[in-house]
Image (tube, rainbow, N blue to C red; front, side):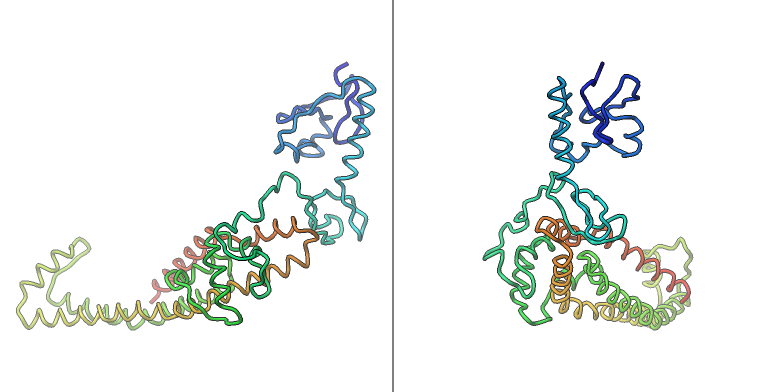
Length: 330
């Protein structure tokens, strides 16, 4: 009989001649069809990344030995919840039965990562303190431009203000990029408020300039800027001066509007590094309280840190949508 000494890796029962058997397409391990459906995947799925290939138990003596080995391996990989006693997987962070936070990651091949990867180019002791967080931890959270941020955080010390050119040029979206969502929402609110209130006088100046222009130049939706300039050039000096004055007032108003919108960027640039460091320290402390080993800390730090392109895109689309809606009703 095929698989006469093999057992199903899900239920542990030996295969019989009448069993409905299915095989994993990755490693070839046989399963009872019902066990496969119940488990939802191959019982050895966690080992596929290591190149695991299933082998038959072979002779009866080897089968008994292999069965004992599998039983011992499953016992070593299990994790029992201290609150309800539920037997959980080795990488369970929260018990599915009672919600107890376990905070354990076993360090299997699914998370084989060099913790010093983001320390490339960083000078000094990786364990040196930067005010509540080590250099190595900062590297895990920042992940990009680590050398620059380690230097910035060293210079900050106990201060809260510095200067960040990226935040100045791209605020408030830089905050969403670095996952500092509360600060991003705050500066976006200020920018939206200034955009709306500063647009009111600008729209009035624009209307006045348009009225003066329409007084001397015939225009429709098909009129090009070159045609408008040619028509203005043919006006008398007094008329031309009146049109130019109206256009100049609008140009000055537009420049003032842009300058007003950049005012929050100065505050954002000054506060950005301090807020970023504060977020990293807060996240690191929270993860330390939860994680029960270094491997779990690294995994959660890498997930919590880094950058978010989706955050930038979503915040920009939300900003444009709101701004266009407001401008439509002005």
